[in-house]
Amino acid sequence: MSDQDPGVSFAAFVMSLATTAAVHFGDVADPSGGATHTDLPAARQMIDILAMLEDKTRGNLSEEEQKLVETLLYELRMRYVEASKEERRIITP
Image 1 (cartoon, rainbow, N blue to C red):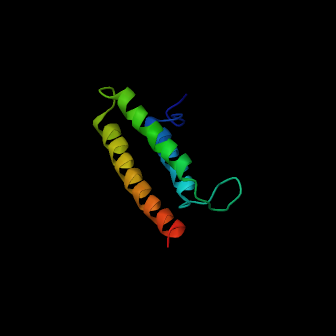
Image 2: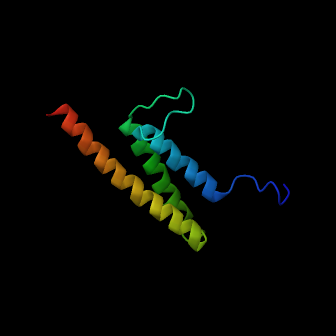
């Protein structure tokens, strides 16, 4: 790979996982069909994968990479709590 084509970076990989979670929250349209839908178990799975990645890479990331993972996990966890509350309001009015 040349300097012009760096390939997949850790940051790009982590962002792709976060984007997938956003699709499952219904915040971003599904690229395959353009529709939005909510799938909280799938969103939770993406959060769990990011948490596992954080755990397994601890001590091996740059400061910027570690901050990115921590920030995304915090934001996704807060979004999950919000989405769970929304779902409960819909189910039990």
